[in-house]
Image (cartoon, rainbow, N blue to C red; front, side, top):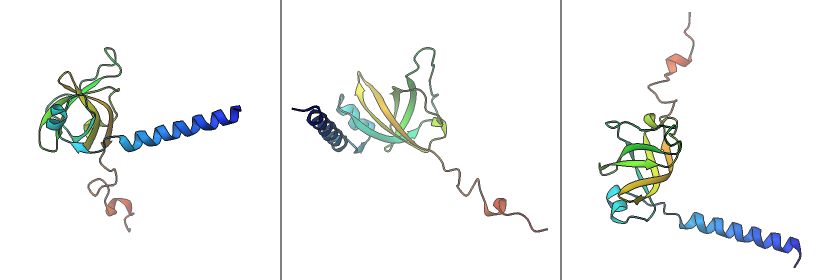
Amino acid sequence: MSRLNIVVILMVAVLLGALFSVFTTNSESVVFSRAFAEPGIEFKVSGTLDTDHPVLYDPLMDVAETRFHMQDKEGEVQEVILRKAKPTGLEQSESIDLYGKVVDGEFVATEMLMKCPSKYNEDSHSLAESTPEAG
């Protein structure tokens, strides 16, 4: 078998693995009660940052851990451990999607997507501000 054949076979295997990974990822959004009912299984939990609790991030203690509380779609609030540095704009986010699982009674997220407010909303930019006044 030539090197070219081996390289082609490896590339096909990697592509098939990537496709399999994409199509088997759990994209169904659940609430915390379901995630806690099935510990060890990865879920996507959607909600909003609970601003009644502080966001805890100390890069001197652990650069890859952020703790905060999130309220899911049913109103349940849980502490979340995000295994990443604190994302920029977390406090201003409109909604959060967490990808993670319950480990030892805590929701541990490995990925997070945030929807941040648009800088082009009506409150911050009006038509009057963008057109010069006639003199």
